[in-house]
Amino acid sequence: MTSALSIVACAITAAVFAGCSNGGTDVAAPAAYQAAPTQDAATRSSPVVVGRPARVFVFAGVDNNCKPVAAPQVTITALPQKGDVSFKPGQETTITASAQGTCVGQKSTGTGVYYTAHAGAAGTDTFAISAKLASGETATRTFEVRIEE
Image (cartoon, rainbow, N blue to C red; front, side, top):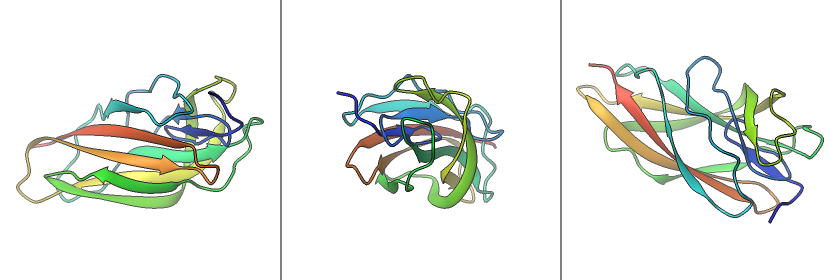
């Protein structure tokens, strides 16, 4: 089922789900999302530093013409065990994947997902985030971060 909205892994389309770059901190680009809730894993390729917030993803919304729509409601669906997750609105990003592929390469603005490792944390940590558009379309992603020792 495809609609006129998209949540992009870095930008959400007001038509279908899609994915974006994270502005310098690499995350595996997702395959095109389906309009129904989906879940896929993303791994940050560079490690996070204890105590320093690191952006791992951006959720944004765009319509079928790649124009921004209202930011999605972003929530944590699975808490990390070794750190904290926070959100920052107004983060710029470039769409790297979208359900219809029409907005790839376009710039957008969305809500950044940041991870901060607790003091003494090491190894890897995982957490999941859900993003929901005003239209009701939802995308869920699971993230894995590697903590620099």
